[in-house]
Amino acid sequence: MPTTDKTLRRWLDAFMLAKRAERKKPATLKFYKDKFIKVARWFDERGIADPANITPEHLREFLVWLSGGGHNAGGIHGYYRVVRAFVRWWAADTEPMNWRDPFLKVRAPKVPDELLDPVELATVRAMVAACKTRRGVRNRAIITTLFDTGMRASELTGLDRADVDEISGVVMVRQGKGDKGRIVFLGQSARRALRAYLRERGENSGPLFLAEGGRRLSYRGLREIIQYAAKRAGVPPPPLHAFRRGFAVESLRGGMNVVELARILGHSDLETTQRYLKLLNDDLREAHARTSPADKIN
Image (tube, rainbow, N blue to C red; front, side, top):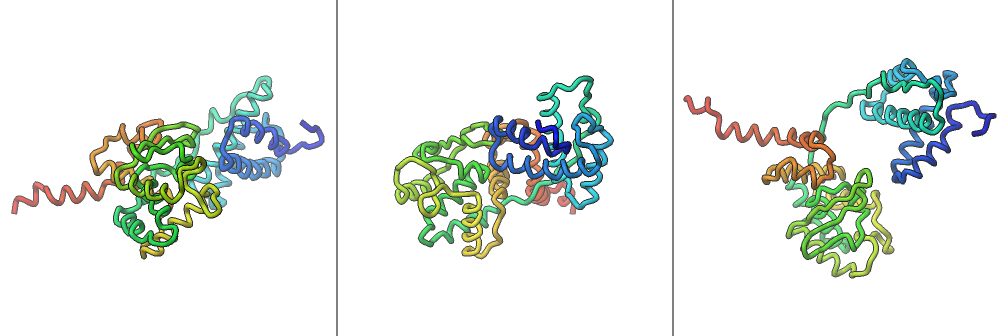
């Protein structure tokens, strides 16, 4: 490391090199870099340029500062993860003498256990019916695949032609979160939509879903497709992740158990999957309204 630079930011290049060596995805690398630059600026302004001098008190002050700066709970938690990853990488890389991990005394900030709304079945049905433009066959296949598999948007755009068997409906997700692969499935309607798209696309290898010019469909391109289909259908455009939530809710309504759902969604623990059960409160309320014992008194 250059000795002329006495700021915490001098560690940025080495830290990012380590993350690239871990084969982090581009979006994750950008997340680390953007957050680390702001973290380093805060510590440098307070004369804390040596990672060995970061104390639990410094970390608590930083978290309080973030809270006062208008960051939400999720954003603060993101900064916490980046600082922790950096400090522990630095300790493993430099092996400092008599150093104690400050994060042993600083808990991660709590993030509210809140789920946003899932996309409604009626919304998806309207969007699929509205796919009547030149790109309608492709867009219909994209929407039904996204809704029928519970894939993340990045997982869908990362699919190659070889990852999908349109006959059996088996889809191999190779670009899963944490580089964990898994298998998901397409039902009859989604398989029909996919086969119609493949007849137009052709059977050549490469990305499954193509943008103009034969390029792989990007995350931004996928979002534009969803927005365009929603506009034509006359419904509010759902966020991309709402399709994953919608898949989870409809699967639970259809009788899938939580363990099965966790495996399809690629969750490493059931706690994450069980959060989707909270989205079924309206179902439970309607069931109670139909069967209320006290309503039978009068």
